Image (cartoon, rainbow, N blue to C red; front, side, top):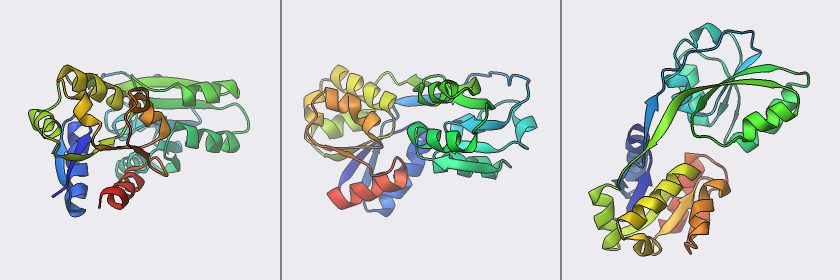
Length: 235
């Protein structure tokens, strides 16, 4: 059975592993990030809408229930699903910050005030784009992604022996950490034999910088399209 390395936080990796087995792949898990709540408190204020850049932003936000009457705009369908399950009315949904920004700008033609449930490590696209258009964004860093100190031994062994057919990359930071950990384990050259699948062009950048030869980018930045691409290319 073809082995696929999934580089996700532990909870997400378990869900991805189930999907990979359904596609008749053998998942190898090596979480390169561990998600932890920061305990940040929600700032009081009058907001027009809530933004969530990931499912963990909804799950780990303390004191955000008071804002559930506001429209919530989500980056990623998984974020929207988690929000709806917790009683939020998820409204605008798009795969990444670049995709949701023009939708927000089209909806909010007058200056608006957004409460942003965000991770500590993030790209500035959403905040910068909204601010440039005259909107206010109160970003609350409700979670952080802590880098793993090493790849799992199963992943190291599978890469070293050439058993990994494909590697799945879900964020730019996780791709950067993977590269660093692969180098530390002395298996960076071995990773070049696998196909690398990235959720977006931005996610692929650390791999491109390393001149990894076989990189595929999902047509849309969500797991459904990433796994469809994997099934076509490796299936």
